[in-house]
Image (cartoon, rainbow, N blue to C red; front, top):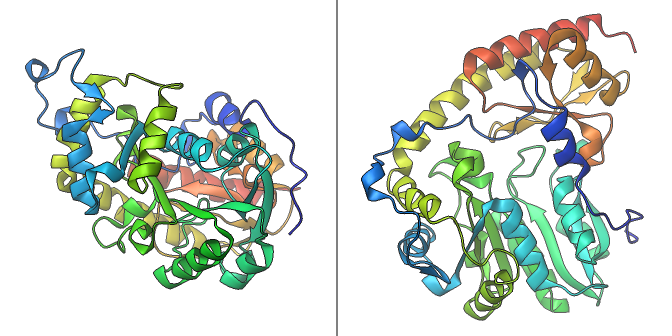
Length: 365
């Protein structure tokens, strides 16, 4: 596909909307798990300090992440959440004017970050009609000798579709042939809670992976994000980070180490929440003939297509009349769709879905 017509931006339209316009009594717009309470972790105030020994990474945190992913600690770069991990990785992986090949639809803040850094975007499709699956042949058709990076999310944001290891391996081979890297945002892969395939970082040195504790575990406030990259590239990212965020928040790093040591406890609560909410979501979707939806049966989100009317108008109507929020699909380049989250409080989620159903019944576009 030809380079996108999207212009360089100095902001994220989605993040502005999410911060100022997504709030509602019944919030179905969030894609991550509800907040995990600090009281659920064995954290004692006397174990925390304001400052600590963090130079190029806090060694206990680096070691915990290296053990989690079975990688050399030299391959781990920590960052303030997945969003900043992506920013830092992009800045190290391409130069202004380089071709960057991106899945479509995708998460707008990632695109805006790449455009801010000077990427020349090209696209390959993930079609609704194909269940949002990636066809490696489409990637091969879109790649050019100028391509320096291929970017995708696994699980896909917004659809939660899993890209299998074999497809990722094919994409890695395509990238290798033109001297490109493959960046895979794996933050939603954590939602498979121990049943996920190994990180694609193990498929070859052309792979770079970003993730965090945010989406699957409800630990957003810790800002515990990371990048997995081969050691020389990781070293380059650490030095580049000196320009951005030289000193992290040490108490958050210390609590992140505790969270990683107790991740099974955190994950069990998340599994229980998702099981209840997925049952409610399936019942809702089963009841609607005015929506078309790819249902992968995993992840924290679904991305229905509205059969009639405009999803932006419907989202405004839903929030105004029913105190319920969803994410308009325009933030994912698909304005007939909207994204629904399944990580919220189960009682709130069930009530929100009931209100969403009532709104669809009343909706007259």
